[in-house]
Each structure stands twice: as C-alpha cells, then as structure tokens.
Length: 250
Ligand SMILES: [Zn+2]
Image (tube, rainbow, N blue to C red; front, side, top):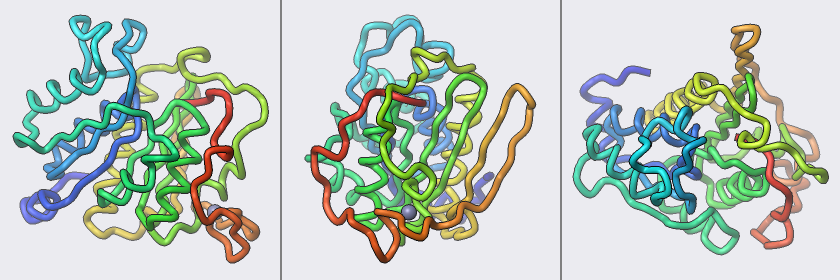
C-alpha cells in the first residue's frame, strides 16, 4: 500500500514488533520504515551468516558473523528511520517475554523460522488482543495470514497445532530470495493496513507459488473447535510445554 501524507502522520504514532529479522523481517522492516511507522521493535538472537545474504536484504558481507539486530538497526537508520525509533530485543520470542512484547506494540509481524515460535506468537497475540501478520516461505512457496486483534480466524484455525515430526526450515530446504522478499513486503503491507484501520485484511490468507508464478488470496474460515479462538478454547495462558517442537519454516 502507498501512504498519503495524512496516513504518514497517523503512522508516526504507531508501533510494530518484528518477531525474527531474517528473510521476511528484513524487507518488512524496511517497508515499515519507508512508510513512516513511528516505532519498530526488532526481536531476534541470531548472527548474520553468509548463507543469509541473498534473502536478508538489510545485511552485507561486512555484517557476516556480527549481531543481526545491530546490523539491521544500522541499515534501517541509513534508510531513514527517525533517531531513537528502533528498539532491539536480543532474544527469541519466549514464553516468559512473549505477552509483554506483543502488548507493547500496535501490530505484530511474525516471520520466525520455527513452528514453536509461530504458535507462541499466535497465542500471545490472541491473549493480549493484538493483530498479527504471520509469514512463511520455503523453497518456491510463501504464505501470509493476517489475524485480527479479536483473534478469529487465527493461526491455529489454519495449522491446528505444532507438527509432531521434524519439518525442514529454509536453511535446510532452501528458499528463493524473491519469494521471501515478496512475502516480507506483503507482511508489511498487511501490517500497514491494520495500523490504518482497514479491517478487510483480517482472515485473508495469501499463498504465492513462484513456480506457477501465481498468487491466490482466500478467506480463512474459523475452525469450529479451535483451541485458541473458538468458544471451546482451551488455551488461556502461555505454558512452556506447549512450544517444544523441532524447527520448520520461514
Ligand atoms: Zn482459531
């Protein structure tokens, strides 16, 4: 979405949390800065690796081996972020910090590289009534789902629970740079819609298949017995044992 001057003014008072500053978080953060979002909170605990560079567009060869958040912050200020508008959380999203982190912003962008973090983020956002944009990209496919602050339909309506077997993450399965760039930019677009009060994006699931060069959008339906967002919900707090699973996607 392009932003007009009044919209840029409105966005100056808004904030966003990026869970994961990788292939999805890098283009998303850049787009949010360019749009004029007033405060960005970046959450990650990784270092830049050479194999990241083709898809993590905030980093250069000089950043390899260095703290990802420090490199991202430097790149975002170079791109025009207002002084003091970037906050760094040198940690993964964890059961002990998830609710406080999502509570502190207006919208959450989840571009994590594992299912445990994705489900933790979904649950924390529901419990704290924060809108969240989930993104994932593996090989030639990407998906983006925007969930309303009221919580339905939610990530658990799409993927009921953590997979029980091992799933490949993008470091193992590979991902095409433009695919992840498309998904990250779309995540930012959806987050901007949320921040500007456009309710039409909630429940919209976009899938992109680079091999067929086709993007499809469909409206996700709420799962009748969803453990998170239905009247029968069983998840009413964050517990450690719910988020233990092998690594998966991004
Ligand atoms: Zn649900």
